[in-house]
Length: 466
Figure 1 (cartoon, rainbow, N blue to C red):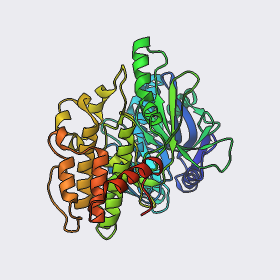
Figure 2: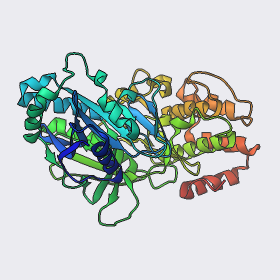
Figure 3: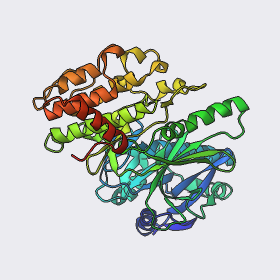
């Protein structure tokens, strides 16, 4: 039975299960700290559990995410939920910060390996990591003690016997960490679960603390430097506020994610964007679905919703500029919704965030005229991206391929080709593409009057029931 030497209050049942499992199943000489805060510069980061084994110090992050989780780049794509930043990348960064802190307090602790492990506790949780980038640092509850017991995880240059350093580690931790006394809270929103993130953004699932049992929301919490000079600080704030400014220009629509609030914490070291917690999964996960799992009519429904949302966004003078399958959510009832407006352009303005686009764009979805200059993004470039997404979803083709599908309605293949035309002037706008798709699905072109009525209904009510 491992020894619990201190800590704060666990945030949820998943954390309680992990702490109890380690206490009851780990070797007697292991030491546990849980729910603590570790200082970093003028800030702090939270750690669910720290375990001191015989050969290392390990940071543990507990994730209650259920079912299949696919890793693509630096994002995790869970089933039935929005994608979020890899918790492995964030945890490893925190591990490096803790190692630096310990070494500054006691020089000899440079030799101690600081490990990081994400524990999946949700029912049926399974990580699919084709590149193998994250899987080494992920386990489930039964595999936790064996993973932590594996001395081969210790990197070259670090000791495989940390027991002589135990007293120095405890002294360094005692002088550095503090217990977390309550779940993180931003305004009225109390965190239920930290999803993931990076050095700039952390994503959380939260509830309204004043309304017990309320529905959950998603928080995107942006780090900022409150001590920066006026110019850089203003530029940072413009970038952080961009998604909120873009979404506030767009009236509510069933095919566009809704923003609820945006605010700064007191010292402006954090800015918080509050979004609806959409019960859906990234379209990225549907691209490999079999025809039986997602038949052609359901795929066409998703494309139609994508174009509905895009037409609504463009009608309100907003350009998305970073549309990919990772930024389209498919809900449990098969509806599609646009999200990911951090780099959108909300109409004419004196400043731009286009300089950040090269860091986030997937080149496969960038229109030819924008390949050398993302600042050239227009609504037509959004349509190009939508065309590539639709091609992949409907035919299974890779970006750039021309593979067709036998069960595509007549006219759809031609529409996809026009949406991906090399020159912007040759592409339809989003509303025209939507009308063409509907005509192809119906099998005949409607008269002009019903088409105008359909546009009016779409503007006010979204797409009618299927």
